[in-house]
Every structure is written in C-alpha cells, then in structure tokens.
Length: 191
Image 1 (tube, rainbow, N blue to C red):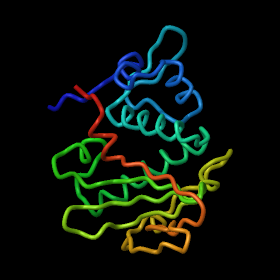
Image 2: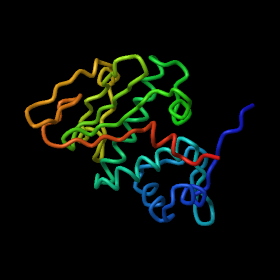
Image 3: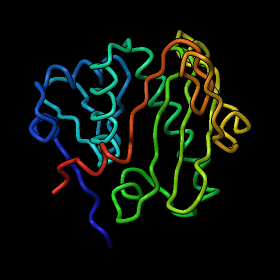
C-alpha cells in the first residue's frame, strides 16, 4: 500500500513560504477544500493532500496576479473537472504526480480576457491541445453551473494571434493570464 502524502496547515505554509492566515482565508472562502481532513470546530486541524498543496500554490500565484478570490476558486474548480476529462486521454493522469514526472506533459491554465478559462496541454513531439472555454461567470456566484464535458474537449491549439499580438492560442483580445501547472508542481517541495 502506497502512503499518501499529508500536510498540516503549518507544513503547507512552510513549504510555500506564506503566512498561515493566507491559507486559512482560501479555505474559509471555499477555494481549497482539505482532501484528507477538514477542521471540525475549535482545536481540530485541517489536513491536506499533495493535490491540495498544488492547489494552494496555484491559488497564491493567481492571487498574486490580482485575480479575485472567487475567480481563483472557479479556476481550481474547473481544473479538477479538467483533470477528470483528461484521464480519458491520458489514463492514470492525476495531479500533481503526473506533471512532476520526467517528460511530464506541459499543462497550462489560461484565463483569457479575464473571463474565460482554458487549459493548454503540450507533450514532447505532439502539437499542443487547447481545452476549455469555460466562462468564469458560470462558475462564480451563489449557484455555480456544472461544467459540461463537451466544454473541456480537446482541439488543436493553432495560432490565432490578431494584430495586437494577443490571441495565441485561445484568441484573447485584450489580456491573457497564463500559468504553468507543470512548472509549479515540479517546483513544489513535497519531500
């Protein structure tokens, strides 16, 4: 039986070099849900998985790019749904393990024009594929919409840059935020 990595709040804070209160805020806002054990009242502790550690690292990067907390939560929600869809294309794929391996696929999150979530998946020797097109406003709010599998289907990530230089590969018109999940996962201090 393989031991599953578990991290306390203090472990996560030390590994990511942030104050615990920033992590608690992400939990209380529903951005990160502890996979191992949630706190149940005074004196109990949250226990996080390796996936949660990656989610914290991604959330902190997105917050550093001034994305609102609700939007960060939406991106992570869609990332989890995307992981499930991706398992059809790459059997056995799971975060963060699959993007920490040697020759791991390059997985990137793209927030296009501040309102649409895409994923870009590149593998050595293959053309990158674009997934998504999920509007943030469908995921944020009181009643987030479910993510339809068709929304996360792959398509070639051809170049569509417009005159302003934006638009690769998803067609941004004004602004684009791109984050490499693979690089973040590979930089995580898991040991």
